[in-house]
Image 1: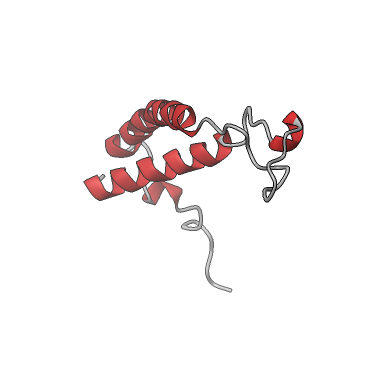
Image 2: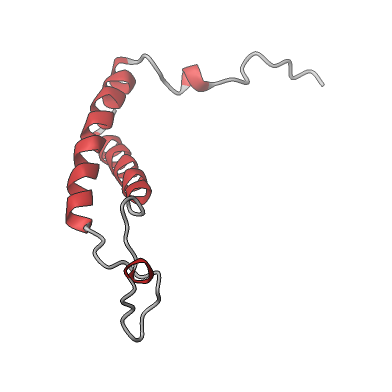
Length: 91
């Protein structure tokens, strides 16, 4: 695996986990009952982005390391994902 592929894999995992974690524990202005004029009631009161980004980074590292190891050792390769190699093409 090249360094570019590793960075892309890390970024994909990181952003997927970030988008999954954003609504977790979210309290909206409508939930609290204090809607600021000019904003939606579904606007977050305190999204805790820094805290979520730290947790997402930690979990991403825990997922990335075994994934990188599996890919770099060759346990899974592009050739092993070729499901159509055994199909008869004589139609």
